[in-house]
Image (cartoon, rainbow, N blue to C red):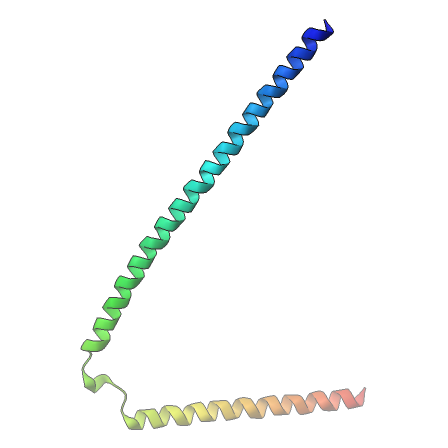
Length: 106
């Protein structure tokens, strides 16, 4: 009786090992499939991006010269940037001064 039970338990264990092997194999196949799909998707996206980039380049090269920024606009942009940056510097130094005052008060 004990011998047959032992044989049945060993058979069940072997069956469970076979099931585990099949599950491991299926997981590996799913990973391979996902890698292939991801690669294919990346290639499609890359092709689409290159096509859009080519269209953008064509549009830029076809724009008339009248729509380009002239020197007066460039000067205006430079002045605005300088004003913006100077405002940032002033606000950061005032914040640092307030922090120093707070540190000396405590």
